[in-house]
Image (cartoon, rainbow, N blue to C red; front, side, top):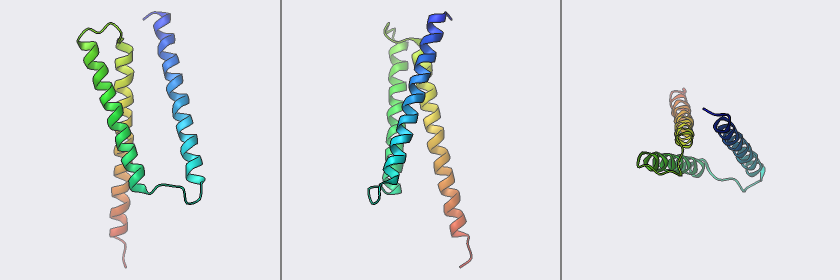
Length: 110
C-alpha cells in the first residue's frame, strides 16, 4: 500500500473519530436538557435505524466495488464493512445488557 493510500485511510479514520466525538457531545447535551430527552424506546429505535443505514451503505459500496465501479476503492469498502460490524456489535451489546437487566429485575424477590 502506498503512503498516499495509508494517509487517505488515516484521514478517514480521523474524520470518523471526530464525527463520533461530536455525536457523543450532542447526545450528552440533549440528555442534560430537562424534559427534552427521548424515552428509551425512541433512542433504541434511532440506534437500530442508524445501524441499518450503515449496513445498507456498506452493502451498497461492496456491490459497487464488485461490479467494477472505479469510484469505489477497496479501502472504502473495508472501512464501511468495519463500521457496520462495529455498529451492529455495539447495538447487540446494548441489547444483551438490557436483557440481563430485565432478567435481574424479574428475579428480584418481592
